[in-house]
Image (tube, rainbow, N blue to C red; front, side):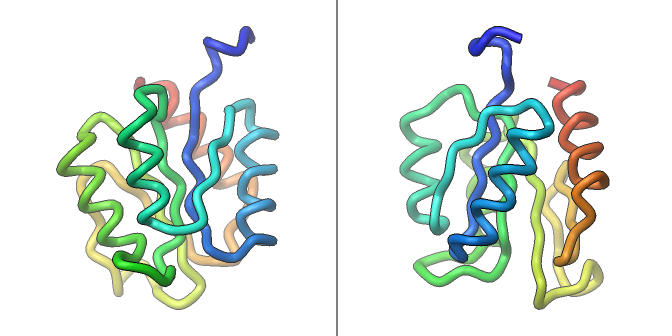
Length: 124
């Protein structure tokens, strides 16, 4: 794939080691990864980049908004972007997912997330 053909995934995770692991997963799946340490940084990135197609975000983050609020903001401001949420503190029944988003509990299975990234990318 040429660089312009690769889909871009924004990885939002406040824990540096977990963010690095998520970036590795995204890149191993054949996507380009952009990193954000919190939701505020993610919004600033989304405001300047038009090539992001998927956001892979943790729910539990410090700052002015958590991953759920970030997902709601994305759905409101950037409707075409697909959303994957993850958490080590919440279960699926505890979160109200925005439309067209998916949830994986931590620790998530790399292959399951990779498969989901490919399913989402095929829709775009």
